[in-house]
Image (cartoon, rainbow, N blue to C red; front, side, top):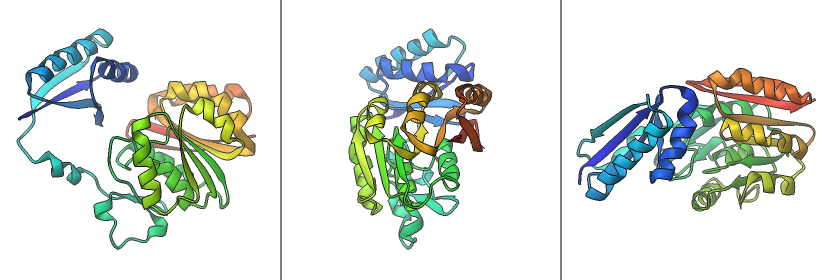
Length: 280
């Protein structure tokens, strides 16, 4: 059965999160980013044809000027073709690879991630920005909390950079098996514990830690910033991403308004920005 591609380019970057939420609320099973576009794929069945109409309507309610494109995908074997789009990403001392590209690599500096529904394969700019910044923050023996851990890619990176104890906190129960499998595949079970639950609830329970990693939506980061500060040991650090480049100044103002943070470093790639901050 042919597949149908629904692509939405927001009229303004600020409506991206609202469009994503509206698509999931209307029944979308998954979304991916393709440049400026949010993309979901459906079948051409009558049921999915009705779902397509519902998705388009949901987008129009949130962003009437969004560019909506519907196209039929070529008839290819999607069970294997998607692998061609996932590659190896060298990020400082670490390289993130899928299992089929892992053979012959040094396990000590390779992060092997099985691409599934959980976020975090190395394909997204925010993940890459986070790992680059982690090289200057993670120290041997560190205790770390990874908020919104997804595939646990950042937790595994922290362990391979020397962290002794990492709490990988993830709210989505469907992501937990993938995270646990990736932790085992990378040989860091002794360092990384995967926890199911809300970051705001679990973070105080795993505190104090020296480093907090949070690759989440900027609005959630702002809400969590006081809890992150409270969870850190004196002189502890946090690395934040999931922030659009155009939101950089706003986020820096939020960080400065607390009065207890020093900015240590910044990374950006594409439209995404990340920052490492330390308690003064």
